[in-house]
Length: 349
Image 1: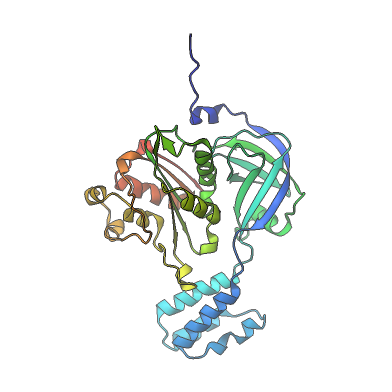
Image 2: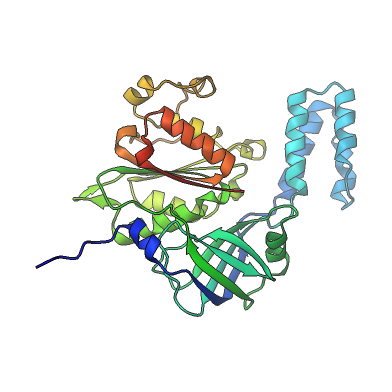
């Protein structure tokens, strides 16, 4: 008797029909926080140390528009260091950032939309279409999106300002070729920046749901490296932290480049490709022919207390984020010995 061959995730993805369907928004909620009080406090502290005049910010605390450029000029004239001024500029950018800037949205489609974990759809709202990765497992009835506010972006601005529960939207898809490999004995490494983690949320949910986190009775180490500026920029952070607590073989490694300006963050602070080196197998790291930009981080020590290490010859790697950053992540992965056949990646923007 002929046994029908099981279709791989990639084959299933290519055979899924492209459909257009309508749906209803069931959830709209911020994933970031309004932190302006803490930001102003951090700026005041730096002004006090630099020039002893924190009162320069009295008018902004009273709700007035602030001329930050004038402040920077005054600080330069007072001989304040470039590093200190750069810190204040970064904090001021955060203060001026619209809130919310990171949105979680769920949509209940009228008929079931089949997709493979990692795929995306085109979401049309307020007469404007835009592609978004799906952030939920295919087994769920609703679709979930993780959306970053883009300055002057047409659809994202409309979504943030106008979207409400009950709105009608149009979904078309699925699309995309970055989907999970079939279960194997290899470990899994996910590398993302910002909302590039959305397809990985779908994949990781599905992996645990289907029991793909083990193979032949042995756990697979699953790594998620997620780079952002601030802690509240980390999409789905509570779910990933829950997985980290519940599964010894799941390792969530967020790295935040700006958070130390605001809090006593003691986690990783370098870029994702640099942090990856800290968790590599020692022999693999020693053998890697690192370019100058990475070689400076060869001795970087991990901030997370994780016993496991990454063997570049025994992983499947997925990378997603802004296109330019994905190129950097993939180049770093090649440099440390991860083969092209073991990698899937996707960029946007």
